[in-house]
Image (cartoon, rainbow, N blue to C red; front, side, top):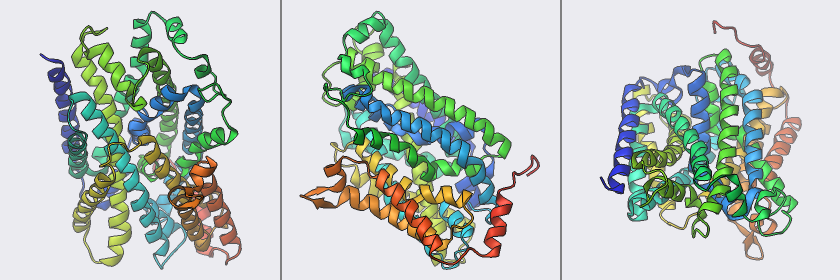
Length: 504
């Protein structure tokens, strides 16, 4: 068999498994099933699906590419993400799961915010859902770009054709099974991602004759986390910006919804351990892919393809180091798994916001069966817009992910934290925080206000830094300047602070 035939066989086997799993987990009888899986996730599925939906193609393409180009000075992002993951699981997971049950069994983040703050006007929920639609569309576009880049590189096809194939596959199993199917398939994909990013640099190091050969072929500055890879000292603003990625976790709806869906608080604790170990191994290995890849294949035009090129050279190229093309194809499926495991979650959470938090306000008498079908149409609509954004083959995966990550972290991160730990926060403060955080990122990243450049480009400061702290200040100030929360809200807060028993 030819190299292309082996790779295609691997993709067919992998795709068949994912579609079969999606069909097996078709249990979407109502909105709670479709969007939250009936709160039935076990520890492993909760942890691995959360982390797989978190990392996306960025783990195997964006981060290794950044390290390939500039060395470990870009590893500050990985440090920030590891710290943010740990803080999110340890500080947010149990309390959020508990409070969403207390707050009228909320099944989406916007619905939780409305119920938490007793917002009968529905304005808070609709505002949150609007930001979901904006930022998740950009985030999904990053996944489509990664899919198009991957498939065009592997099969020597047109970028747009590759993007269409990848998008169609993601849509197929997302529409079939809903949240439960997405969570279980993401669990499988999370394990594939981890194995791929762990093993490939090991194989390459062995093929090169050991770590000494790798270090000799990489510029010395690449191993210094305080340098920019070009001999200069990394700017403090860059370190602050990269570490700030960790703040984004507190506002990531596709991750937070996993906390809400785990079976019990006991399972949440176990999930936290699994997730933290997974993310430390995965991020550390992704940095290694960038470093080892720089030594193994110098001079790549597109650094974000370094993992793909390493797999090609180890398993697939003529005279490959380990001539097992089917295994190489399965490693490439690991990238595809990373891309799909995030894009499917983003599409599902966006559709939940559009359907449950916006459409349901317009058609209040709609049945759950009707809303499930509307949500499927919403998935198609969001995917279509994301596809248009991703049409440019020069789109940067890292840039698209960064903008969406900042948007969610700023709009929702401070509010999620304060809603769980500060009883004084109220509806006015919540609304001010969501709007100020989201708009700060939009202005910072997209509007040229300084000498024809955006504030982000001019200052070099990641928009999540000002967005998060402006939103935090707005929530606190807005809450203190307006009326106290009602007694009912305060009673709910006290109830949600009490751990649930095993028989919850």
